[in-house]
Image (tube, rainbow, N blue to C red; front, side, top):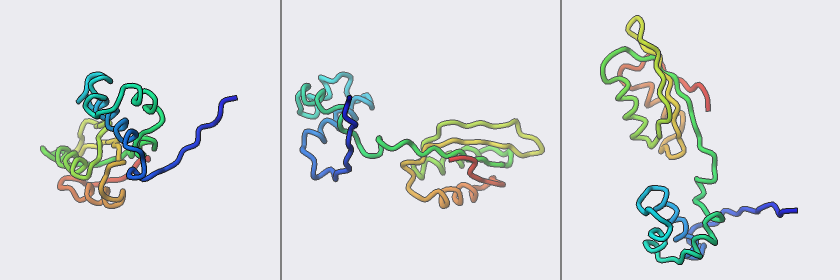
Length: 146
């Protein structure tokens, strides 16, 4: 019978340097800054064997958490720049837009649903909703799911 893995949260400064370099190498690979494991290990000054030994055992804490995906619904005036202003607000706060759905505007209003990854958002959900709701052209802003 296989042993169940145990997990610990450890402050980065307490970890051996090799673990931090493995995380850095994985980041280089995932962002495309390094095309191969060989290149990533050279850039981080670790051996390929160390990389392969620890690559599945260590990852940044936020990567272990399931993403916090929130779905927002907006009622907007059908005016140029309103949706753009909302998207800018999301970006300024660190949200990553996943989907945007809109119904064809009627009576000068559009219903828009936006799903966003909010793990990196710099404010609380309440503050984000308040900021979005106060964007010029927004009639109504609410959280649908998340």
